[in-house]
Length: 249
Length: 330
Ligand SMILES: Cc1cc2nc3c(=O)[nH]c(=O)nc-3n(C[C@H](O)[C@H](O)[C@H](O)COP(=O)(O)OP(=O)(O)OC[C@H]3O[C@@H](n4cnc5c(N)ncnc54)[C@H](O)[C@@H]3O)c2cc1C
Ligand SMILES: Nc1ncnc2c1ncn2[C@@H]1O[C@H](COP(=O)(O)O)[C@@H](O)[C@H]1O
Image (cartoon, rainbow over all chains, first blue to last red):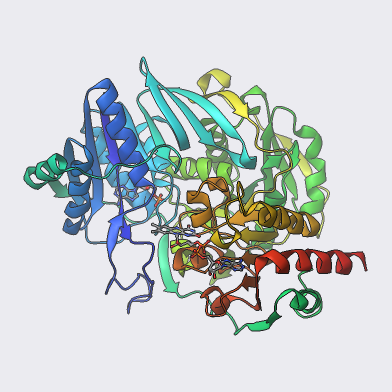
């Protein structure tokens, strides 16, 4: 089975985000990066499936050359090959999906794995867009996944707190949610492997954004709050304020 | 281009959902500003009976796609339907709610029309004739304003946009599609229903959230969690949780609020024994009013709370429930 896992490099979740001088992007000064949270579940799923069914798991990302660090982490976890579509720009999910789809077209693929949502851009869109561009079926927000005889059996989180059991013929796109598995830590052999892996790099060729950022702002500051009191005696006063001052009850 | 706004109104429990009506409200106001028409689109195996009722929520026209192919949710089915109707009405904006379904099919529909998607928007406005959407990124650590060169495809965060009250007598139009059940590639074999009547934190107007300080519900924390549920039931709130609680297996992942959980904007958020880590604050700082209960007066949660009580959840939460019960009776 040929598996491609698309991962995004994103600021770590403890990062403080400040708009940059251009007023459109965030200021990268002092920010640490990591593989976007949910993409780790996609990586683990891809590696587990390859180990079980044979084949190859390739990790693919679009971003600056620095993403080679995250790609090497993916190799160290157990991916077999890595491709990087190099771009220093900030792109929306449409532009990213278009560039990823163009690259994936040139690669053998039975299963494409994505995170269900990125921790920075949070579009929850890229996987479905790649599926549409490649004319593939797609199941999003998977919390369980098995492949048997060329068919993926997926459990996904749906509206209304429901879980849907879905079957879909491969090739298909699946986006991954926490709960799917426990992402592994790289071992020594993996780390050695990662060091010598040659990353397949090519320019990204992303089209213009589908939605353009006009400006980025910090969230509006919250007015200073107050401590209503100490202990259970303060409960009555709090409810009074919620009712008469804040008017939310 | 026309000035028409197409709104897909999602159903829940066999009727238009609250989030769906809120999206319709946003669409109506947008259409009014643009000088166009708000067109509601509904789909299902048995939805036609609800079409006329949408007029009261601001739709001047309701398109009805009724058929077996819409009985259960399908990304393929709804994305094809939305794309088809967006073309048919030459929509300048296509909107729906940012629920699990909306987030899923809108991206595919937009891509089929070579468009991007503005996800989980919290504001829509018209500036110089152009639609500008505001959306939080990094779970609310920053806000971006975005626009599209052509049609704007957007999902709207629940509980942010008001339901429209200016009503119309809606014109009703049946919609036909060329695909059937057999064309839907991902086949739903079974739907395991979520807890009946359980309010999802992402769609709740009030959230009562518990943190690690409530302790293990299978052990010494049992009373605390029972108390929290009681408080939630008293004020009609959903119960949320910090990641520490979810990682400990005390609550399901769907309850987690924060940058790697749900981003929420309820009118009231009550954080009980939650310290206020940056990832948690990111997910809930868009709440209208924030209340914090924590025994540590230096806990970071107090920095963004509108009202705080310094105290022990063991006695403050029951006292609060009693005080709410009293006030709601009056
Ligand atoms: C990659 C990553 C992603 C993350 N994403 C999220 C996320 O999405 N959401 C999230 O919430 N966290 C997230 N976190 C975790 C976050 O950093 C914190 O660890 C977590 O939010 C802490 O949860 P807590 O406030 O419940 O626990 P603690 O930080 O342990 O705080 C417990 C609080 O309870 C108070 N307390 C204790 N006992 C009582 C009592 N009897 N009465 C009153 N108060 C009491 C204490 O004073 C303390 O303030 C993430 C972390 C990482 C690394
Ligand atoms: N630059 C990128 N390179 C590779 N994959 C990406 C990139 N951006 C997003 N993705 C994938 O798409 C998923 C959803 O991202 P988003 O649509 O931004 O929420 C991510 O979890 C990744 O799996």
